Amino acid sequence: METDVLIVGGGPVGLALALDLARRGVDFVLAEAGDGQVTHPRVSTVGPRAMEAFRRWGVAGAVRAAGWPADHTLDVAWVTAVGGHELHRLRLGTAGERTPPPYTPEPEAICPQHWLAPLLTARVGIHPAGPVRLGTRLRGFTRRPDRVSAVLVDGAGVRTAVDARFLVGCDGAASPVRKACGIDAPERHRTRVLRNILFRAPGLGALLGPRAALVHFVTEPGGLRYPLRAMDGRGLYRLTCPAGPAEAAKVVRRALVPDVPVEVLSDATWHLTHRVASRYRAGRVLLAGDAAHTLSPSGGFGLATGVGDAADLGWKLAAELAGWAGPALLDSYESERRPVALGSLEESHRNLRRTLDRRLSAALCDATAEGERARAAMGREIAASDPGREFDAPDVHFAHRYASPVIADEKSHAPPAAPGRAGGGDGEPSWNRSALPGARAPHVWLAPGRSTLDLYGREFVLLHRGPCTPDGLARAFGDRRVPLRVVRCDDEEVARRYERPLVLVRPDGHVAWRGSAPPADPGALADLVRGAGTTGRGAPGEGAGG
Image (cartoon, rainbow, N blue to C red; front, side, top):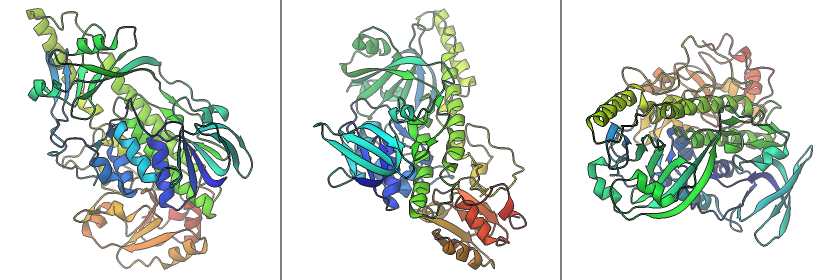
């Protein structure tokens, strides 16, 4: 069998890459060892930048409608036990009543992995009707100068030889693909061994009433201080706790005050690691998602970072296969995405340390005056630690600005945004007010339900207004067979946010170049952004960038 791309791993990131490649007409095979179902879900929230990618791929509506109740609270509460003493609460409303933020057409969505994975798998398509081969493992592969030769084995033991132009390992934290390439992923913080207990307690929400939450951080001196999370809004929950020999049902009972029936569905031990691969590429083999980076789940940045990998890699693979990519384009995948993983890793670790570093009084759970004082003090400490940073961090999702050889350089005098929540007196973050090269192109509503982001995705887009004539740039792109669509947009709000009359946006929605006038050498700019230039440090933008 021959194909352009072999994707190994059918988790959310592998499926995201499949969606992107399918949209670009790239032939691929996705090998997934499992059956496409998730019995022990980990991922629960899909962040806003990932939702923007899903919007581009046509699945955002399905993700949002997967089943989370619109009237279920999204609150986060710190408690000595669920239904016990409450120490602090972040009131976040419900999915049905929250006001959409001004900076994105796609706010975060609650879609746990046992809903998300089957949804995306069905959308991509299952063999023989589609490219997803379930119950199929990668037995081994050999890297060659012009292809990767791999062997797949299905559940019946049938072997299939595959020759692919590229192989992408989306095969998780242990990543046999990464290990086979000899790529290290050094530990950046201490590994922790934890336990996830999935259970049903159908009557719990009704008994809690206004004390219910999306996430309860069980905070008690006996060792529980991790989240208990509602997984479907209807009685399915997941408790995270330190690994240990205690019976799962007893651990769950310890975390709950109401005496409700509890059915333990699964109990899994896992390793919380903080790693980023030293390289994302070994010839024609590339890494994405957990194969390239593992983060603490504190903040929910893991899925967002992985989907961002897919959005960056997909169009570059398509360009390489179509023959218009220069030698630097595919290498820019690592130089753009690895810094994002490093930044997200450190932010998620800060969130984790905020939880772990709290010193809990032995009297915290006591029904005594000393216990009341301990709870009041802990409530004040939690409130003062900026706990909302873990649950509302759009800067982490949006503020990164790529600096790579395929981005035209433009010096910004504004300091980079600190990781955390978006600032600004009007609630509008700086990164949605400017189309700096390397940054995500700003969102502006062009009409009800139609965003500027909907203009981008399939090809480069040159957004222009005023008297500027981009004919020379269009010819330069055409001469190099680089797909470009020229869009005239005289919208005043777009002009205010995008700042320049000429803005070139890549297929992944990031700005490649902008100028007050056409570049002096359109061919040099076209070469730069397709990876055939010498450097992204300035040349085509000089004198035209404004």
